[in-house]
Length: 318
Image (cartoon, rainbow, N blue to C red; front, top):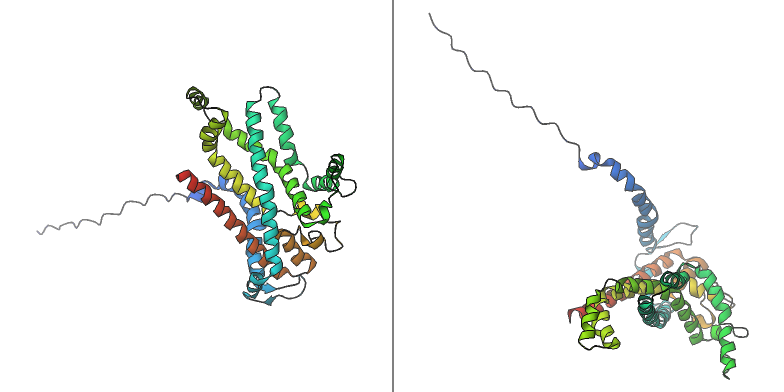
């Protein structure tokens, strides 16, 4: 009698492990918590930036249909004498405001760091101009630099000098705007320098005194090298804000010329790059060319920021 051999049955594969949800699904609550910032940044940041680039390639008056212009707006921008003049005006005002402001902020920070009593009161007083409305500050400075009733001209007359039409002469306009910006940002940067000074170990100053270094040598050999990263930050931020100055000249000079709101005063002596952008966009209703001007301003700011960064970086390497 034949014996029937049993064929082994096929071995079933092991069950697949359960699929774990993706990282986004596992942490969806965290992503949902931070999503408002990114949604707002997308709506009011990236999309407008992308649209401005698209707009710069078209001609548009804000109401009718857009007309394709290609790179012709940028070609005209490179030959626009008014735009280059606004760049020169902006750079001059920025230089006149930034370098005195950094010097005064450094001196103020050193004095605040050495103060023993009422430190918090001094810090609040120096920081107050930065949180005050720029429009209010500009109105006050318009009175200070007024030709007939200004405080500056009153002081000049008190010492026997003639009055100066500050807001009606090219260099007077630049000095007034630069003074306003210096007053506004000195306290803010002094607080930043003060924070950097407080991170320097006191043992370094003691060692410098033991080696016979005086206050001036200590400042240039110990304090300033250790403050270089803070100085770089202040210089870059001051460059970005200074090259985008708008409210200061716009409010200070709006009643000094019988021209548009964004003219920059008599002879366009205070017309900065951003003022020129507003003039082309809202006075001339040329939104396409205004967008091209905005991208030109962006490139100028980036260029100057990189130059400042590289100059200080090279000094660090030395």
